[in-house]
Length: 183
Image (cartoon, rainbow, N blue to C red; front, side, top):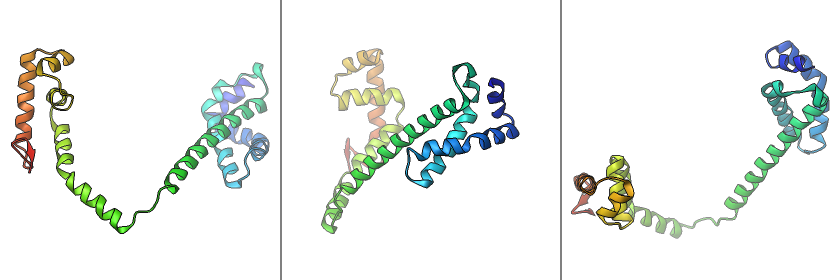
């Protein structure tokens, strides 16, 4: 039997015979656990795709083909239930949100517009070389001294000063920044 399972992964005729022999049993197994016909059909297909991928793992000495197939089907049903549960959670989150009225949308648009310069600055930071960005973030955002930033990055203090100077110079030359402040 082991050779038979290994063959179904590479021989379409052997797989077709294996499928015809076991599709009804797998369908019954899934229909006992799932009440939607479309889901049952999808799961049957998933089981047999999984069988193709794992045919080499079948060991006749450990049990019958049907027991092995039911194990694959059980794992497939479990994965479907996890997926459905996650989908339900997402749907609940979205459906629990209130719709925005015109005033809410207007306020959010104003906020988004007001933060435009900050978004541009963050985008500019991503364009800096990694070393310059790292020093700039440690000094400006994390409020470390240049010496502390150099220590955190494992570089010399002079190197950190040069990188910080270059980063600031690059940001100052951007069209939306004047004297370190957004225009």
